[in-house]
Length: 364
Image (cartoon, rainbow, N blue to C red; front, side):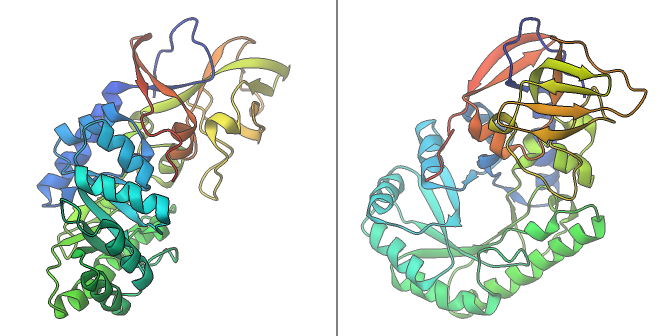
């Protein structure tokens, strides 16, 4: 990974390599198309109108989002086909916002409970466009979602509430890890549980034609089966976690945090002006430290404060000089993007564009 950083760059800043970004987008679009999957990427990874536009022009059928406010932000930017891939619990304010959204765009919403379906049906009753519903199924991540056999109860409640039940979806969170076989098993779990849930709903006479799964770690493990739609998100940028578990290479990293060396207290240690308020604080057993350092791949960010990152180097590795700029690839890209106002687009050592993070802080 090599993004020549501009002279005089004000740090910390999130920097995008548009060539790598476009290559990642094109590769995922082509892989999905060639295998017969529809692609509905998850925009919570980038939250950016310019990147959404690139995905849609490459063939994505619409976007997935996590919140009503993310959906509102992308609707304002012109995206007219959105899936809120989340079991939204509607209070009075969210119900009004969702109803307005349903009048403006083709909208799908996830549900996983009878009560949630009833609230959703009441909220959008009489909207100018029908609201489509996907029932969330737990395929092994043990987060939200019902077991396949329980999908029928939720689907019937949604249909009785006047909603159009069109499919099922899941998130394979257990597909993360170093073991490629584990990712394969997670993909098979997705296919099996979604197929079972879809069969239950079809047995009730519901027209289930969307079977949606796929995350960045598991998407490469898909083969034709029950699933017909994929929702990866992180692939546009990739991050230190994807690099660590082997789902991308260094050449596929499209976003980094540029940071200035503000202290060199020892030959084996230096400090950067980037902390948890830029990088996020995600850690897992798959990564070493608080981010990947392309210029110092043997180094490790061993300490992270709000505005400091302490880097340790192995013996014999020469560190940077005070005042120089270094790159950090965050462990999990979604949080840093949500913390940033803009992304700097850099080519050949020059800032060629600035992309506003359209859905920054859109967490409700």
